Image 1 (cartoon, rainbow, N blue to C red):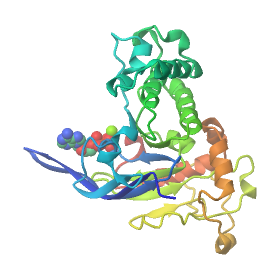
Image 2: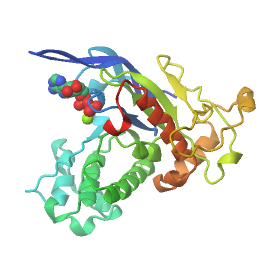
Image 3: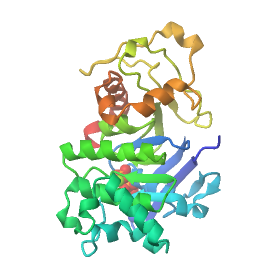
Image 4: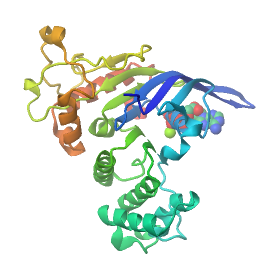
Length: 325
Ligand code: ADP
Ligand code: MG
């Protein structure tokens, strides 16, 4: 099956009077239909720049970005872009805020309006449809922003640190809510986050970027086999042949554990010869990654294992410490 999103050898620089700022260098990755990709990397490395290229707001200097095999410029209507700030307008009610995308696209009609009201009900905001944004909690506002984004029925969701303005407790629950909504509606999603835990708790794969200009350092494929990690067979991902400029990590790669995080027992390396590829056809991936909620993932033994892997990867990136993401 054709990937939903193909990013092929993309580079981008900002040009200003003061000079050139190279932001992205030779970035390649793909997202399959229904896949949840998280992008992590040091602060200022080019994550938001990458999302703005994916959304079509800016164009790559070299390389290409394809959505369903077409250039982004021909697929803009299929993209939903959600930013860190919810950008809800105070002078509009919640219902009128979530209608905005449809209104702009001239697709607001009695049918689409009643679908919106249904979505507000589903996501627990129906009692608030006549309220103003300032009368809602931070989590409710983020849900409203997501409904506004989903209302236009995008196939591809781009999320730029959408939870980072929220306090920790709210962030956990909103992240859980929103990622479940995205899973249930079977959207393809690309989430930029500085929060490693968030990335591990929601993504199918994590793209780890280097410091600016961002290059792809690793692509980590996640799989959870809660509750019994030790009974899982090991596997290696062989499904991303186009991504040769970086290595891919799976639990078969066993990092040493020297920083205090507990690491699940390493898979048996003797099983390397009959590794099961992680593909859409692999029922284990479907079963595990799809069913475990973000909260369940956080409690799974693989969680700290993946955390260690990414932490180490980011730590060896020059002098950038992961806390400075
Ligand atoms: P991230 O989202 O990873 O924190 P950004 O994509 O926002 O990083 O920015 C990447 C780099 O590009 C940063 O060094 C930033 O200063 C620079 N940059 C971002 N926007 C502009 C712009 N409009 N003009 C010049 N430089 C920019
Ligand atoms: Mg950013």
